[in-house]
Image 1 (cartoon, rainbow, N blue to C red):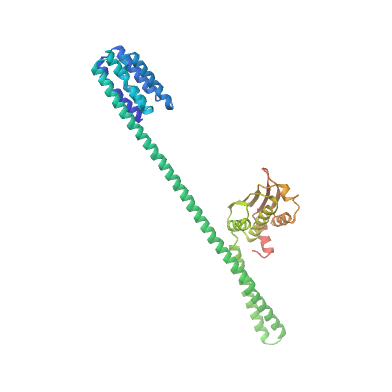
Image 2 (cartoon, helix red, strand yellow):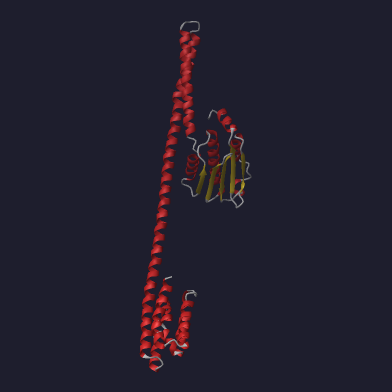
Length: 371
């Protein structure tokens, strides 16, 4: 748009030599040819836009009247080839030297040419500065987005570490309560029952029975608290990432983990993390792989786990009859899930497991004392 405005200004400057020449058909025709060449240059890409301006200058050498309107092609020459812009002064000077152009017409043409050069260079600098500003703004925005992404990653990593530490501490407290307080209370119940039997028929027996019932109730509360703490520790995202990080630490295997799942029953979390641990361990032992991908997604009806590598496929994992694969399948089948393991579509080895959501998950967990 800036160049169009500049050319309209140069066209207005060409009105001075036109007025000095008069509005004869030849002079008007020469102006129209120069105008057509000027706007044709806007349609041609790159340096090809110089061709109409050069052609117009050559015509001006042959037709002295055309030299009066050389300012229009001078604008495009100054924009694309500044060296040729100086040569564009030759047609008016040649016309003046041959006497084909009056001095005032030649002076007006040269003055319009100078204005065209000034406008062309000014607009070129303006457009270049604008493009540089846009590039700088894009670079700054790109850096800003990169910093925002980095900050999000750092915050996510911080949240992950805090969550992992919190869950680990809860699991440790649950173990301590179960192994120490729970055993002490169980021993107290056994001792109270033993004393009650030993003093059967005596008045103290009723008191010992009450003590045993109270300690047994306390033991039940401790067990409930332990189960609550353990259930709080079943964050699939944290556990799966922790398992993969610990398994791949200090090895050349590069892991990528994508977990779209949150809290899960203890049985489900134990099953899926065990499958991940065994699958990644198999990759390290057998696959000779450079990369392993772990993907766990929670759907409304099931949890879906996929572990794949870029190793040797079936040649690295044998015929699929190993104890590790059998153990993984048993765990998944016990929860009513589906398990498959075999060569991947793009090579390597793929382990797939899905565990349904529903009553069977809770039933299994309770049967093992994990819910």
